[in-house]
Amino acid sequence: MSQLKPDFSQLSIAERIQLVEDIWDSIVAENPAAVQLTERQGQEIRRRLATHEAEPDSAIPWEQVRSELFQRNH
Image (cartoon, rainbow, N blue to C red; front, side, top):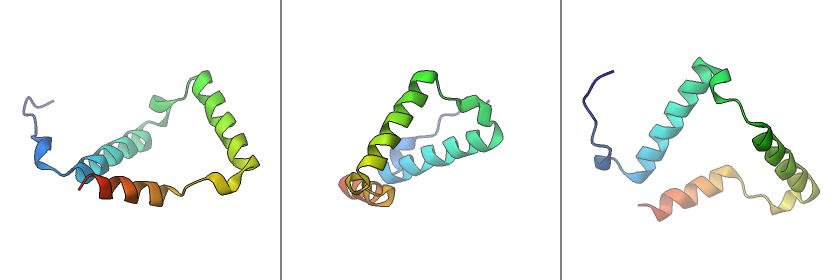
């Protein structure tokens, strides 16, 4: 791996978040087993899903959350 470190501070926060998402997606695509959940994480996901299924109107779509985050950080 190269010793050069990019200056990520030159990117906007939105661009850095997108970069992290892209890197994460590439890791999962290359090796899904590398990102296995622990039992506790699985339990938490199941708990949250049950909460959502009991109260579906309480959820906020990801697109809305993401948009609000990007607006705050510009």
